[in-house]
Image 1 (cartoon, rainbow, N blue to C red):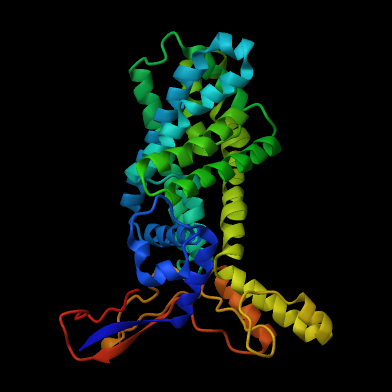
Image 2 (tube, one colour):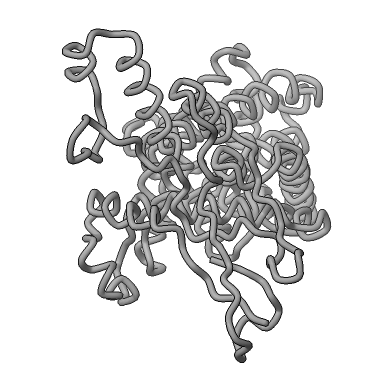
Length: 405
């Protein structure tokens, strides 16, 4: 016996929303979306972000650590490049500090982040977005999110420290130590709150860069998508926890005044506040805003709002305050689907022979779904993006009994 896939009809709503990003329902329905495009829509990027988080949640710890090690190394290449190019322009720094900041931002970290994206390695500051997006949509467990990020942060640290030692052995900074020593001092001097805010501003831009790289479908577009936000963050003096895993130890190892910066000072004054700031920015400005605007959180908040005003306010005022984009033929607004509309299977096994799996009910989606249902006085709607399997005559397809979207 085999299975065939019946996609939930609510997925048609994805084509309606995709119009916002320029992909029309007509184009999608005709299959023309498969043709090469220079960029994809925000809705498609959100689906890719969630799918990436789901995939990363399934990594074994050796794979996660190794890919994170590489990301730390690649970003260190970029960080060192910035120090060895922009950091040596002493006259320009004095005469034209604006131009100096642009050069420092342009030559270095954008190249490192581009390598990370194209080489498929794992950077903590973008993994926060991937993992939390998957959790918000109820596609993975919080334990998987936490362990993934822990492995990633320490894997990045190992890669960064390895590159510090390699640059020391290679005597790369010989005669060019002054700027690197000043960086270590500069990054451990501000107060906790200052570095926290700088970390927030930094990772907002870094995740914009990652998002734009996912939007672009060619290498040139990905590089340009990374270049502009990262140049802004470096030129502005914002703080990136993984870049600092190379920058601060490198200055401490080179000696000079930076040798008096202790490991505890680096951790307490920089790594902790910057890591927290980086994480909070990804959580709020990327995951939060997009989950509640184009993710399943949008529909559930709208449903909660509409049911609340209908229940507690006079009909005339309630009708004026209701919002949404699906209008019933009569009787006001229909509830929106409140489902994740990405192409991710939520089954862990087929239903043939009673081996069906159970979709995840965790994350913000589940909480909002429960809230919406309680306000409407109904049971929770079916899980997001559910597919069903219908028995058919045995064919060459689906003989393994698995149902996948």
